[in-house]
Length: 135
Image (tube, rainbow, N blue to C red; front, side, top):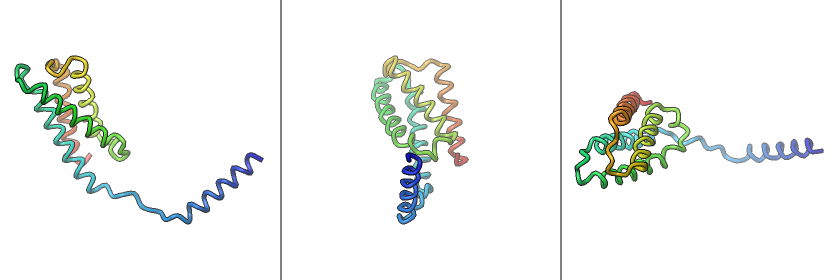
């Protein structure tokens, strides 16, 4: 009986779904331009922030701005299935995670250690190259 009731529900659902208009998924071209621009802006912001002198009085403000920017970028793009497989997305996401984790753990004025900074900058370079290739 259970099987028959499930097959009846499935048949009814399939019949209803054939009556509903099918809308194609939205084109990604315009969104792609926006993604490239915003990701490039995030890359510039990360580079400028982590390369600031530790004695610069504006470090804490720059870190706060970077955290806001990175949080909004991640919130906007992490649910986009079309972006998850892109090398540019993976590299930026990883770098933002490292930067954010550092500043959360050690405070906004703590300088990033040389090895971590080099890895973050390398991820930024890789992401930028991937963006230029449309990946």
